[in-house]
Length: 520
Image 1: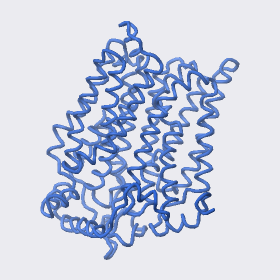
Image 2: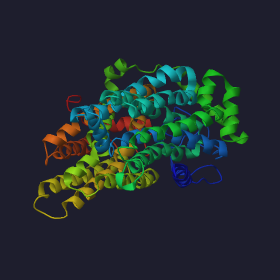
Image 3: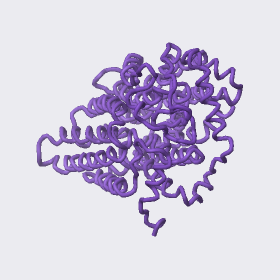
């Protein structure tokens, strides 16, 4: 099922090329940076040569398809699966421990779920630096499966609740490494003209992972969602990881990494396997030009970035956009929607959560395919307005439940609205906005800061929300009405439109935007 979903989505998402190797949109775009012949950015914008703006598009061959599908199933899928698996599982896991005479309190459950964020922070910040620098992208993803196996053992055979918390830290490391490595690996192995389409497979794999975990743990579907079968939920990722361990060693390493560590010949050999002999020499030349274009620049450290007055506005926007992802309340929905539906009186809360996962996958497919039609700022504004409305309706459903019929249906509709509007806005944009607003010398450092902030906020929301839900009903979601209202204000006043702009144009946009405490 996972392979069918990913393979068909891959074919549909990857844009078609004309005989010059360009998509229609790419023919109309300008180079993203006039000083760099080839700029690898996660936004999916086209990269062009500084000589004539044209390149061969490369080909999609079986090696490339297999590599992308294996990494998506073995790494991206794990991120999503770990995000969703605890949602429907709370009732029967807690009951299992209680039947054993062991306590599993609300605070303990919140600690277990939120430990995922601690592991994600470790994996995203430390993993690629410690493992990736010496092993490369491919080997990092393979080694990452050690933590996957450990997490499954700790989660399935935990004698006390805090063993599960340790297991969540291990699977968080897996997700953190995937967050940092997979987009980069996909970017570096893909033909230039279709890099954006291939890059979306990571986000699609995450949403499919969430859906599969929710479906397997739904009691009414009679799969693994019961007190006797729940342990098997934590071995599904091991099967996917085993596929990656067995197949990925036969897939090529990143050509960019090979160029830096083993030289031109090794990089060219990988390009031939991943694309074709026809484009190999030209692609190697692109890598060489990119490497040479950055050799004379000193990349900013974290301290230097914070001290750089010229990038202070970009830093504020970049950090805030990362906070938008978590404080929008989406993780509260993905982690605890079943608990929310229980308190709303929904007849089958677990099945309702699984239906949300299905909608999440479908909306993500459309979001990643069509997000370039509208600007980033426009999508964010409409997303915030939609989420404010959805949270208001969700709050109303809780307040009016004792007095008005159909409030449980309204709670499902409102929660669905949160998912849909998030997917079209911060769900897609937050991952690449930093690449569009920071120059190359500051981009890696800014991305590291963004990932750090993202995972810290992930932990905070995951830990506090179940307690918040328990003691602030029926007004819990007014908190997120407040945060999304602030993000709407911030987007309108401070977030620039970056679609189709070069780095120099984006810098001018920031210069013309008034920021209190900076320009005042």
